[in-house]
Length: 248
Ligand SMILES: C[S@@+](CC[C@H](N)C(=O)[O-])C[C@H]1O[C@@H](n2cnc3c(N)ncnc32)[C@H](O)[C@@H]1O
Image (cartoon, rainbow, N blue to C red):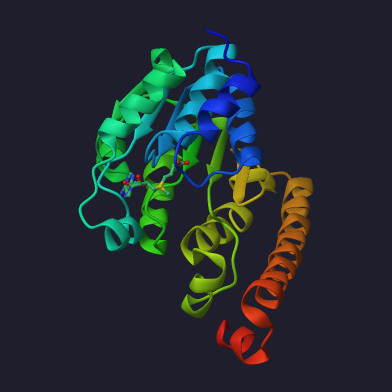
């Protein structure tokens, strides 16, 4: 089976999910490069991001991909659909894309899986429950398993602060976690973003230069975030100072 990026992109396109093509390509490239430690995904839904990760792994070092999800949906899915069970569709989509060889599904919550985990992790993509407390649990549960030089990536990390803006721009939980635990900690360098994903490299030694770079990256992020926020409020919901003020 040919797992080049175009083939994988076509399978991913036909799988329900929220990942953009650029975000998928990022997952593919980093999974391809990963050779130390395994790949972990928190939140698989119907397999869209899993297909990108597995496709990259298959053309790279065939690094195993652990796809962790209780498959019962997050709170927003349960509100929308009632009772949720995505594991059957997940399996069907993985089979169709023919990438199952490197995938190990783990039907558990992130916290449960982490508590019994015994493998070094080289690349982790976090896209599970989006409430702040859950994203923080994801970070704290998996940070100790991530190797020095390993990559941690979070989905849905942009948006204006506070609940009033959830409606407008998505989820403040992942945004607040990356601001606190990636940009402001002493354990990550090379912090970057692509569409809504923020990712960084774990390091045991953060140099002065890296600290300054993190501060600059944070400034860029704030400007970008607020520009996007202003843009969306302006063009999608109708510009109103009252609406923006509610966000602070
Ligand atoms: C936004 S969806 C993931 C989308 C997927 N990454 C994609 O690109 O298609 C969130 C998923 O997180 C799962 N989830 C919710 N709470 C979780 C938890 N505590 N641990 C792991 N996964 C969780 C849900 O079941 C849901 O399938």
